[in-house]
Length: 616
Image (cartoon, rainbow, N blue to C red; front, side):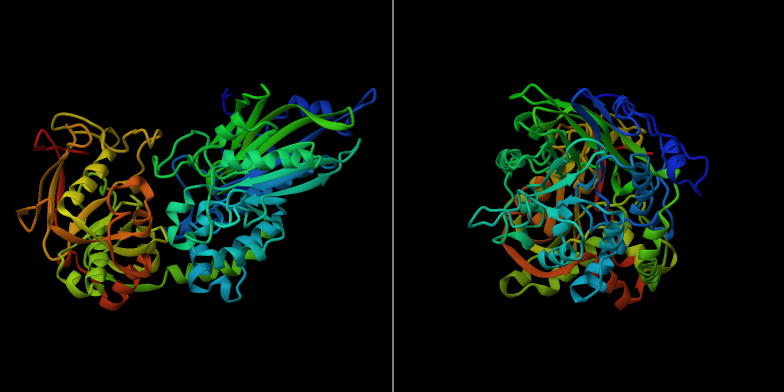
């Protein structure tokens, strides 16, 4: 059963100065019956002690410490006026701890910590922590005082050495019961962590914390983990370690799972384990009291999943990503027959846009933040005209053509032998509709805002039939509509599919472009998925099924990310491990000027019944 989200307050000002009890009130904190029963000094009913265990949680922080948008060089804002950053989350965490002083509290994170912002990138690639720097997220999280954190899939983006270095800088364990050695099948990270907390009255409470990461790492970061780690299913590993925690005498078992609650997979059946399995864990593994959910970037204030073996409800809570929300899970405990028992569990999420950032966290990371702001604002070239990705999901735009041009040019330069004669294509997706280059000076942050992921470049050999199949799969992104329009973008994009129950994300819509000649095609969205690509031609000549191409792709696609056909099994003809974002930055730096006349073309268009449509 999913209960309504508890209300969150809306800030009266973007410059908030609230802390402590006032911060909790403004953030929408609701006192629970269990809190009232526990009372200020705990409770003692006859011979039974009662207390309240509070589990505080964040997830998907993605390198956000400050409430700052490095791509816009301004305070972060969105249409909901959310705020971001662990510094704001820290204020809420401190406020709950103060309110619950003397009662047992555990603080957890559900993963995806060290990737996602220029701040995180800088200390992975520019001034890497493997060279002696301390990661800003380690500086911040150590101050907050986490008890444990689950590994997220993005923890593996920069390689195992960077992850292990980050792990060594933390004052708490990174947990991953389903990141295992290929030979021994034993976890290569700590699978669990046990903390003992003392209530005001009664015996100590033994809390077992199990960390589970995402099986999709085997696909998404194949280049970093293949042969070194395997990632079995969450249910499978929880079934091993939850009983172990119970045998160790844990009164309460909490899972931090970097896996959403919808029981879906973006990678389809490419792996035998679902990507979003938190609800399955709750349903199928006895002995779990609550799950801090991550990965899906959605807010679940409170959800219950009934365990089929015990009939007990398991509490699930997922706070919104980037530090926008903090989870507060309240577990009422009663001591009887020699141990503590969970009698009820509720949760809520607190909105960080109502509070001021924690001064200590800000101070700890300020110098690193300033360094990165200087870096991303450094000019690297100029653009002859303004370029925007705002309409990249409904029409061919020059800023995406730029990505394809640089990728294809790099692959062509690296082809050898007979492969050097292959015509070169390139794929690119609109990762960020808000990306743009101004007319005039272009900075690192302009390019970083266009290519926000840390992907590397590969080239694969594909046939014309495979190119068409790839485009058909990409065209699943569009909803099926008829007529010339006009249509709003939302009426034709982000279609719901079996693998994308919340709508196909923009990053799974790839366009394909040619380097030395245009690859042109129509996408007929009046047709059902699988029959939408029309008039596919290279250099004005229809593409033959057996025609061969070298196609520039990113490592996410080549590893199977998104489930696109052919590219994960196609022969690799180029792989120099070059990061695509850095290739774009280097190209602008070397060439000085971005001129769309050099690369822009109208390669594809949306049609209905073969006729162009209008999308506003």
